[in-house]
Amino acid sequence: MPYDTAGLEILGTEECLSLLAQAPIGRIVFTDRALPAIQLVNFVLDDGEVIIRTGEGSKLAAAARNAIVAFEADDYDPVTRTGWSVVLVGASRVVTNAAELARLRTLPLEPWAPGPRDDFIRIRAGLLSGRRIRRGDPAS
Amino acid sequence: MPYDTAGLEILGTEECLSLLAQAPIGRIVFTDRALPAIQLVNFVLDDGEVIIRTGEGSKLAAAARNAIVAFEADDYDPVTRTGWSVVLVGASRVVTNAAELARLRTLPLEPWAPGPRDDFIRIRAGLLSGRRIRRGDPAS
Image (cartoon, rainbow over all chains, first blue to last red; front, top):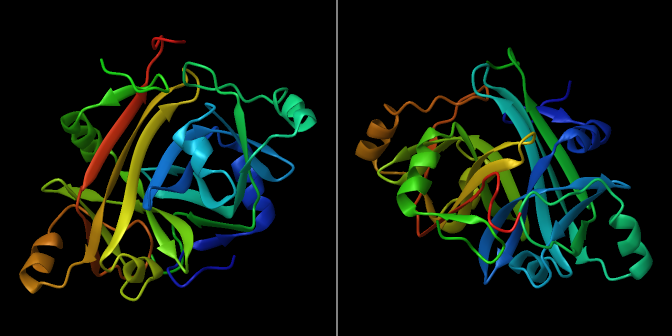
């Protein structure tokens, strides 16, 4: 297994995508009025890109209009102190093409929050990286 | 309960701090070479500020030197589709005062990752906000 300088196992692209595909929830990182912002969202992967639903006119929809954002998903066990985290950094856009919107509406992506969520945001995986801490990693 | 325009319950400052105090893991959001970055970290609260340990000379230690960062912790249940998220935005700094360092080393903050983690980062809670989705929230 390859490790980074911090002693964490480096995950390959396929494993990153496989972990993302199983995660129900992630966090989108964007800029809001020049300040760092982060929002918990449910999502699906579509052709290796992250798809999020949000309310039309929401802060998130405005921020994700042709921006560079990060997206993170993780899972961890505080008892064994093990876990993984996958981060994707890439260009986000609000989907406006009618045919693409119709297809995205058929994806298994039901908003958790109440109220309409009719805007779809796509995040392209420009950079994809993942790390894991296992029990008994090298320097531990 | 107060709700935001997205239909999520707005958490008060005391509840945000109480949830943060119970969370074993959070995510620090910073800027790395002009790109948004996010890193999973364990942490403790000290006097309402977030304390993180990191390796001396790490990317995180460099990024957190007098920057404005965000910090997020959350918990959710994918079955009931309920959860909460607390976000703190504020100034971060690497602690250099010897007396403060000595005190921080006594906090219950053991690194999960292997290897030395001797730099302490403090994040002041300039802005603190939290949201919760419960079963049966108003518009659902």
